[in-house]
Image (cartoon, rainbow, N blue to C red; front, top):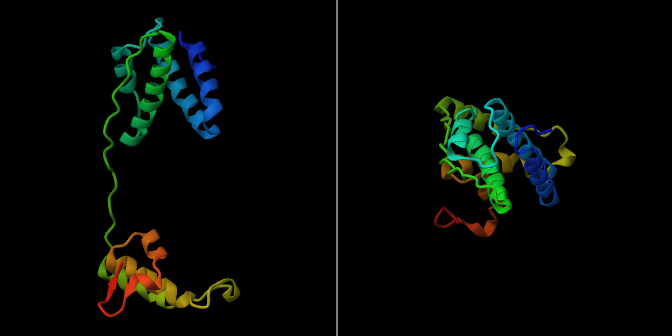
Length: 171
């Protein structure tokens, strides 16, 4: 599977990871180590020490969002720690800060009116499978989310004791 000068170490590292991680995590580690392995082969690297220069050059080839790059570097950092325990000097790359690429969507007044209209006029496809208060809960939950700025789980966790009807306040 691996072809670089670290083929044996990468294989052994994955075997260790298999004992403690989920199959999907090990699969992700394998993909990242294959990228590093391919880079080492293409660049003609033959050593047994991962230097800052080689890892910096490899990290510049990584594609994806900053979170993805950070996750790949974290895998190689873990592999580097493993190499250090074996006595092979390895540079441990610093993990970059993740830049948020989240762009909020702000609904127009017309869209909000439309959302509330459809919520107010919902009819369950199978009334027996829904709560008898289904047609009240959905519009109320949407209005709490919209007007109070609560998170979905906060809204769904509200209980009658969390509502102060006298002061018109949610806790």
